[in-house]
Image 1 (cartoon, rainbow, N blue to C red):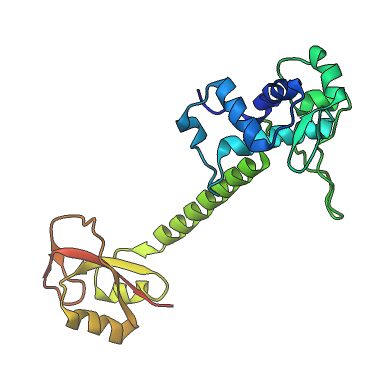
Image 2: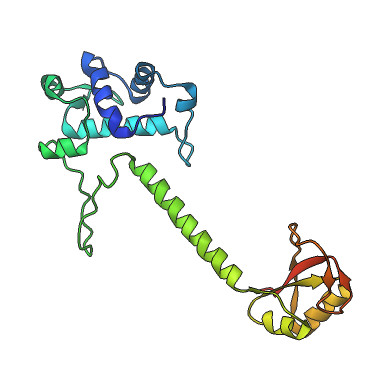
Length: 229
């Protein structure tokens, strides 16, 4: 099976500690993994930070239970079911989450409002993800957006000149993608005339052949010309 979402671990974790025996997080996580029959592959999943995804989710399940008072600390790094948890356990549903707890006044997950903010951030935005997982998801979206914008900007500034005069105009503010014979003298002329040089010879060539944009000789590859900034 796949690793349960963190809110799906809340009730199983409470059931595990219902025997009253103190446990630390790693011990409880190991016992819970055995109960849930998680595979080594499941347990090997990690967050981008390298921290085990399963341990991260169990940690947040424990955090929510601690906030509701259903478990309590009983020593350095140790926790166990509380009297409140023991009394309420028989009446609790098989699925527990923040919405259930908030509806019964057992805790609130509204983030504090910043002085200049117009409304509070809802910490329940996605019950399926832990805060670290939400951050990873947002960073992935941001990185993908930045990449798409950069790629779009790059592509919009690449042009194929029809002749040498057009190449000189293009490299003033962009990249010229053109046939080149490979002669260093042609590159030197471009540099002298425009201060641009060959920046990249793509491995993925269009095939066929053409005429060097500088000298007109036969050329077998296309390159990018631009200025260095």
